[in-house]
Length: 184
Image 1 (cartoon, rainbow, N blue to C red):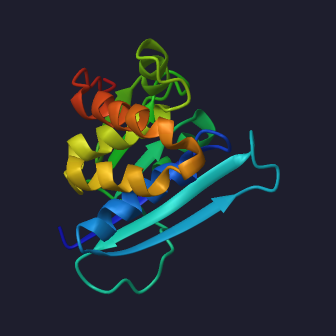
Image 2: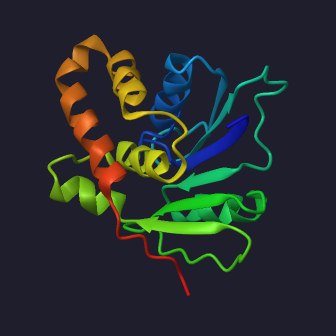
């Protein structure tokens, strides 16, 4: 995998920047070149948030992701905003608990995962974002579970150390989720 450009997007408060940080740190632990570029509206929680992550085996010229290889959309406005920007042969993953999206593009792979619902059912409220990262790993093998576990340990603050195990569990819930429903 020479170069991978990922756009993670949703509302502020959904953990979009944290998800991007996990992907970036996993690249660091894998010895890859990386960039992490957060973007969020001034209203923060409830406003828009997105994060661009580039992973590469070569130097990265720009951290900007204009046409991502992968879009991870946690809500409908994010899906609507970025769906057409995804490169042909790219991947789109949507939290179907929140975004009732259906992709009409035939040149991308489209996956729906009820991440918010899965988080609730597994006692992982607020960790739908990490479930989405697990699904991203399953589909792309951009890293390893071991590297992502290390990324979780690095990213969860000492004040919230009790959340490390929950984040690792959420990662595996997404990674093991197999009911991939593509729209017809």
